[in-house]
Image 1 (cartoon, rainbow, N blue to C red):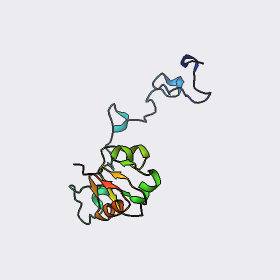
Image 2: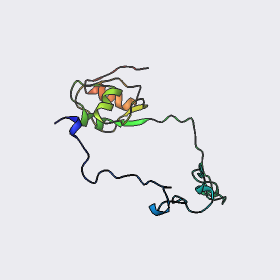
Image 3: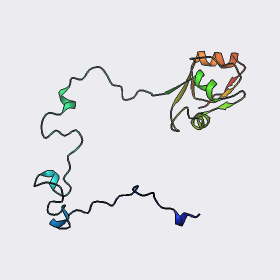
Image 4: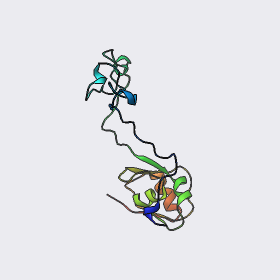
Length: 148
């Protein structure tokens, strides 16, 4: 078997609808866009959240509180997560957390928190770590290396 002999199973692919090919095709004339109006024109789209000139929902509802656009957002990783995915003597850094599936994308700001217990030594190389988590890791015989 080679790549040239592969094909999709029956019913997996569907021919695209060819519009504007005459009235006998069933999709001729206006090509399924209806008659006139903005959406019948070429390039005729309405932006997301547009409600036909009515006051949009996002502006009708009252706004409460303060949203800080400069807030630092961290992905919290607990000691229970580390115990579940790593073994004795492991080096835990951003790449190891990504490979183990604890975090979903690289380049995230991560903070190790102290929820749970750790009973084996590990080496942690993460920028942010809580003091309680540091104490628990060092008490288990592990070490924390500063990363800038």
